[in-house]
Amino acid sequence: MVRLGLIIGLMAIIGAIISGLAAMKVYDQELSIGRIALARAVDTHAGLVQERLSERELLARVAVGLFRSPSIASANALQPLRASIYAFRTDFVVASWVARVPRADLGRVQNDIKAAGFPNPTLRNADDNTLNPATLRDPASVLMDVEPLNDENRSFVGRILDAHPVVGPMLARAAEESKPVSSDPFVLLRNGGPVGIVLASPVKADGAGSVVGFLTISYRLAPLMLANDELSLFSVALRDPRNASNNLTADADGNVATVPLQLDADNPPLVRVVSFGARDWTLIYYAKTNPATRAQELAAIIMLIGLALTVVLCGLFGYVSYNNLRLSREIQTRIGFERRLTAVIDELNHRVKNILAVIQSIVTRTLRHGADIDIARELLIGRIHAMSHVVSLLSESQWQGVKLKGLFEPRAIPHADRIALSGPDIIVSARAAQSLSLLFFELASHADEGLSLVGKHPHVVAGWNVTDEVEPMFHFRWEEFNTSAATRRADSEFGLVLLDRVAPEALGGTSKRYFTDVSYVYELTAPMATVVDETEMDRTERIGAPVRKR
Image 1 (cartoon, helix red, strand yellow):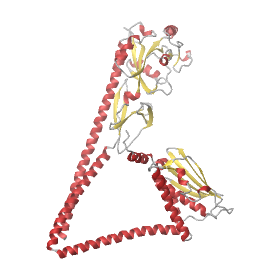
Image 2 (cartoon, helix red, strand yellow):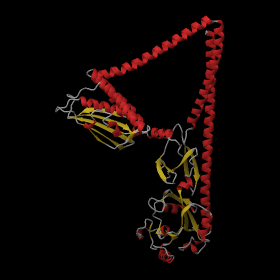
Image 3 (cartoon, one colour):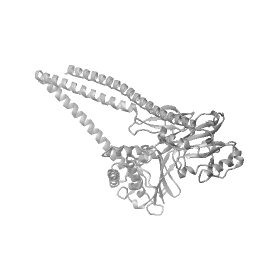
């Protein structure tokens, strides 16, 4: 039997080693494959973005070549380009002609805009306010024509763009470098409009070396750089050129939002740089799933399969060997069976003792809290009832969390009608609800035990709020009036452990309790991320959903 055990043990060790080596090999291969696939997908996306940007820049250069004198300084300078722009089938928002007009010609330009039929021919600032001649540059950059010619776009004609915080510096740089220049991202057309960028291409008159105007074409930022497939391996963001600590992201509807830069040491993002309008744009790619996590899961599956095969082989080998030995050595087999039966009984006795020890510890702590067996029984039943109530609430919500005020219902804590509640009815996670239910029960049951300074039960006020500091924080305050350190019964050992250590550690926060002149106060502060735990709720919702949402 000893030799048989040694042989089976050696087989098990060899099988475990082989399974571990196979799992390590699969982990390395899967991790490499995942990273290579992600890098290829990122390179493909960045290449497509660069191709789109190059096409837009080429369109601008071709369109500049179509300008001819003397139409450059007229209000209908885009007339030769209207059909050509749409022939390229680009997704531009507005194409416009911005002429550099000397101060002496501003009156003629204003008459030209009026003759072209634009609604407001008066020259004005970029914000549509009255022009200040003292701040006017010479020459001035006047918006003289737009495409498409709708009512909203026509209202922009006649504005001088030199003082615009984004467009002005872009036009100055384009004039200085004599090449297409792109702007920083900003809101186009109107407040609340789409976020986009503008490409300004300088135009020179025939035979002249100076820039006489700019052809500007604006594009929405989302389809230009942030377009992505929902089934892709990554999500893409653009580093904000105005603030390197922020990213620009787009949702499914193409709405662009500014979010803080995300850094993950375990799953760092990939960075690619594209060029557009004489500047570099940094695209940041975040993997939707961590390749290392997927590799670990697959390696664990391989490890389990290897161990299962090892167990099966060892079991079969042991079974055959055991039956062969049983036929020839019945007495030794009987002894071995009795020994194993004894070991099983010993293990069962050991586990039963452990269970009884745990039950003894719970009952002992509860008995220490009460003055007699009746109080201890009520506390024990109450604590179990509080947990049962929160489990019922979680079952009703399919474990999507419970409303905080639901934990103060009369069926959850004693004498709930004497507790004044104040605070937003937030939904807390399942883990937080279980900890808070025991906490509220402990406070409520002990408040009922207290001796009032005026001979009545304490008046209790429970309030909570959420503050937006460095991160959203949950603040809970329990205050029992008409009590003091001299009249209030001292907290039990179980209550102290629950109030000072168990509840705060479960929520990742801190707590404190103290007496004022007329009240007893308990305060709990914890991050909203652990109180609400949206990750836990989303995961539970996905598991319980009948159809996977895309």
